[in-house]
Length: 208
Image 1 (cartoon, rainbow, N blue to C red):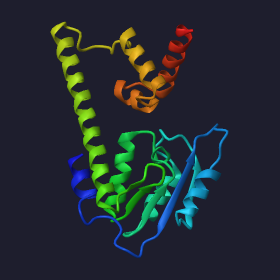
Image 2 (cartoon, helix red, strand yellow; image 1 turned 45 degrees about the vertical axis):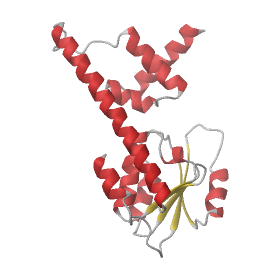
Image 3 (tube, helix red, strand yellow; image 1 turned 180 degrees about the vertical axis):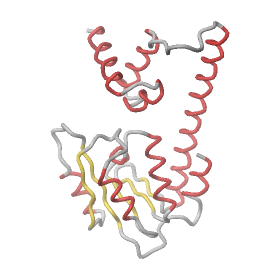
């Protein structure tokens, strides 16, 4: 995260003039909506080149996103309608931001009014990065504490234990309330996203 803050959005980074605004639009598979609202906003923002796709925001293997990143040149600006169109994972958002900044390009989110080509926009992204680093540090600390307690109780080693009721409740409530995405909780607990979905479904049923 320190690399992200210092390299990607330091003073003087971002578009240096002569670049192009490149629009990225995304809707999830199975959604009733389409990209029409996003594309209108992107075109109004001056984007003549659009990269559109239908894919989950929690997936990293999105072909149009990678085409956009490969196409980026110094001075270009990536434009999205909303920040969550880029990704629903804060970790992935920050990684994408670093990719954008490393080529000397900028980023703009129309709805949130984020623009990393301005000092205020760069400061905002640095703050987001700092909060993300703090959250990861807290998770690492909780994990280390849990391992230490498990070792003290002789529970470390052998086959991994099933998730207990408290962890399953935390996973379900985090996803249902929107604090975390399914992908976030799957990574945190080293389980698959289908497992997370089953836990959430079971929690909803039990709450009826």
